[in-house]
Length: 173
Length: 263
Image 1 (cartoon, rainbow over the protein chains, first blue to last red):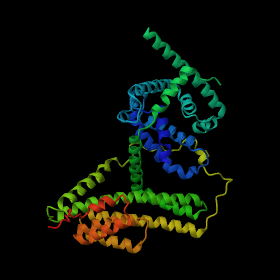
Image 2: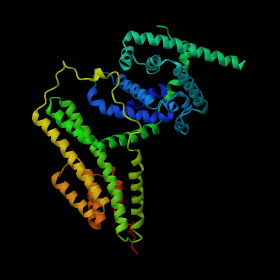
Image 3: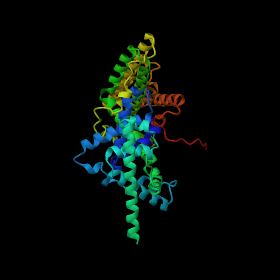
Image 4: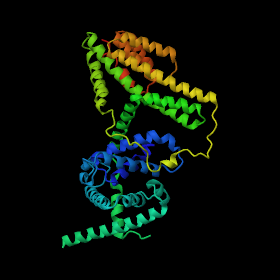
């Protein structure tokens, strides 16, 4: 359970705006909740929507309790490079690593700018390739609402990327 | 529904793998999670889980009861491992301080002592989870609630009561292991040995048999019965060669390497 779903929990928390310094706390808390609630889950639905619901709740609670120290969870505190992976011999080439880190930085910046409800739907649909019914279960909304949020999130993301590219080209000139 | 443009899709493709955790993250969180569960268990959750296992086994929810009992066993074994680790640390320390050793004995025991104590104490301040757990579950919770219309599979009362009794046995075994640890800490290895014998008599093939038998050489060594300690260690290593405690048991009361060369 832990091994199979750790990466999903980690990615989800990161994309929901949890800083690298708080990710381990959040992941630990999520699995503690999972440990407490797993007997009640009993495999009645897909595990990932259920897990994402827990991640959402834990991140929300952590934000609430750490509101006085927003940098602990906020996007500004993100590290742009994963220091643990720098020395990994199996990782990407230095150029690819930099390109990927830059893409991740941009993605997180766009996600940070999105309203929370759209962000959740966008993460699950576009990055986790989750179906709309599962997304609806994960975020606790109906299918029509999910479609509506996804449409708005895609348009917003598209505009942000286009704007960023245009800005880059203007600077290069 | 409107689709993303080519640039947006390219960015998502490039960034999709960038949020993956490293293996060190996975390992660190796993260790912290075990510590968090252990802390919660030490605060009384094992007793709660045992009670709920007993209660659940009395009710017809067989699957839940079985899961809870299994979880209780797993967590009890995790706690027992830490207790045993502590016992090794304390026992080795006791042995070092109470017995004047020859130069040949000292180095391996000192190594065990410092390593085990460091390991056993380093995590102590981090046992409690760093954040308060949420007070309620996710929005999805209603789907996790048991359906009224579904009838759970029937469980034979005898099997249910057996599971409940087993969970209580594990709790009792764990309590004795903790007392053994406390006796070693208090410098009373004789009481620790008496407790070990009591546990063996009450639970000859208990769920924490491996943990008990890995403690015996430590206790015997702390009393000063070195030959018996080595015999117990050899017996343990024959029975549990792959045990996580094997390295430590091997080092307890270790003899210096003896050259077989004859002159």
